[in-house]
Image (tube, rainbow, N blue to C red):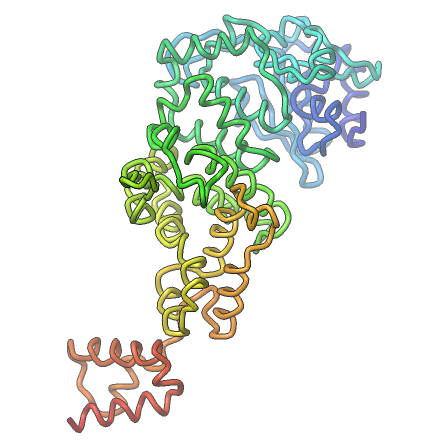
Length: 465
C-alpha cells in the first residue's frame, strides 16, 4: 500500500516509543477497491496519553488540537493534513451525533477498537512497519463478493445516519447490502430512528451519493426498498404515476426520473460546463431529480386513454422547494434550481415551434439557457424512445446555437440604456424612468432596437411626445 513518506517517518518514530501506527478507514478500503486515496487516517496503539502523541507529531509539523477531546489530532505537514487518533470506544448516552461518551485507550486491541466502525470494508487496518493488513471482520471476503455488511448491531444503531451511509456506499461501489444489514436498516426506519438526524448530516450523505455514484438511481431504489422515502413524500409521490407511453415507454414517473438521474450523473462526469464545480453539478442533479414532481398532482387520463400532465413543470415548483428544504437551508441554491424545473420543457417546445429570436431572448431573462439545455438533455435521454436511445438531443443543440448567436446563452440580453443615460438627456429621475427603460428593453428583445444610438433616438422621440 502506497504511503506518503512523512507517515512512514512518523511510524518509525512511534516505534522508538514502543508504539504502533495503523492506517485505518477509507484509505485502506479504497486501496482494495483500486480507487484514488485522498485522505490518510492513522490510529496509534501503545502510547499512554494524547500528550505523548502530540509531542511526537510536533517534531514533524503543526498539530491542531480541535479534536483532542475525541482522541483525534489534526497533523499538517507541507500543507497536507492527516488525522492521527487513539483507539477509542463510543457509547450512546443521548440523542444526536454528539450524544456519545468517548473512552480513549491506547492499549486497546485493533479488533476491539474497530468494532465501533460501521461496515466491514471500513474496518481494515494496515500495519505500516509489518506491511500487513489487519482484517478482523473478514472484509476482504465481502469485497470479493461485493457485499456491504455492518459489523455490530448495537454500535450500528447508535448512529442512524449509517442507514444513509449504507445507501451511498452501496450505490457508489455497486455493492449488495447484506441481508442482515438490510433487515437492521428496515428495523431502524420502522422505529423512527432516522427522525433525530439533522438535515445537514443527511444532506452530506445525499451529496456523496449524487456526486460519487456512477448510477445514483441504485441508491434511490435502495432507499425506496428500505422505506426511507417516507421522509421525502415529494419523491414517494411520483412512484406509479403513469405517463403517456408514446413519450415515455420506459414506465412511470419514478422510472423515468431514475433514468434521467443516471444520465445526468454521466453528463456531470463527461461534459459538465464547469467540471470542477461541485455546486454546479449538484444543481443539475437536484434539478433533474425534481423536474417532474408536478406530475404527481397534474396527471390525468382522458376518456380516450391518453395520459396528460398539463402545467406539471409549473406545479412542480412548490414540491421542489419543500423537498429541497428538507435537505438544506441554502436558500439561494434552492432558488437557482427552480427556473430549471419550471422551464425544462422549453428547449423541446421551442425547437418544435421554430421559436423566434425574441422568444429566446425572453427565455434568457428567466433561466440560464446553457444550464437549461443540460437539464432538458438529461430529461430527453432518460427514456426509451427510439429518438432518445439514439443519444442526440437536437432540440438542445439548436436552442444553444441560437442563444449563442444572440449572446444570451448564459445571461440575459445586456440593456443598452441605464438611468444615467436618461439623465444625460435632461430628464429628472422619476418613476417614469422604469417605464421608459422597460419599454426600450422590450424593443431590444423584439429586435427592433439593436444599438445604443437607436435606443437614445427612441427615447428622444418619446420625450417629444
